[in-house]
Image 1: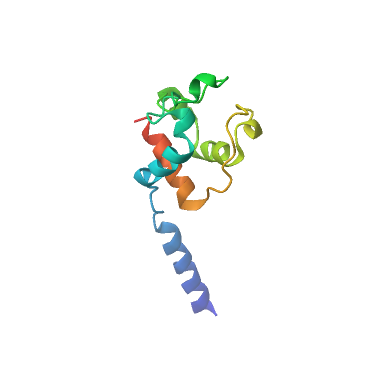
Image 2: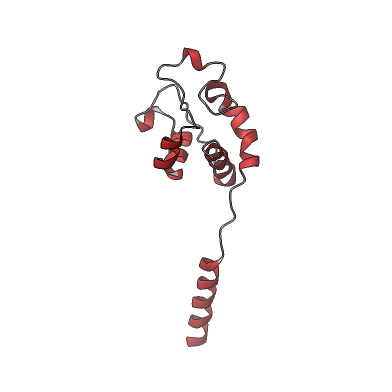
Length: 115
């Protein structure tokens, strides 16, 4: 029994010590171009083709102050739940179908605008 417990502890430690796969910003670009660029623009500056009609305006992802203060979890929450559910623009629709790697990759791409 003790050997089994030690084996389980070692396995858990090894699992926790394994770094998570990094999100792929390049893969997130396709999702961004399909779902986000209409409002946020291909440059991420909030200057997409529909941006002029939005009030409040679409988020400018190149804003370094915003990038520094916002968490990935908050970005994911806004993407999946929409703006209205998070006290933001009701014009930002929810994309609740995005999950896992696809969502992580989209967040990584949004983060790439701040670099």
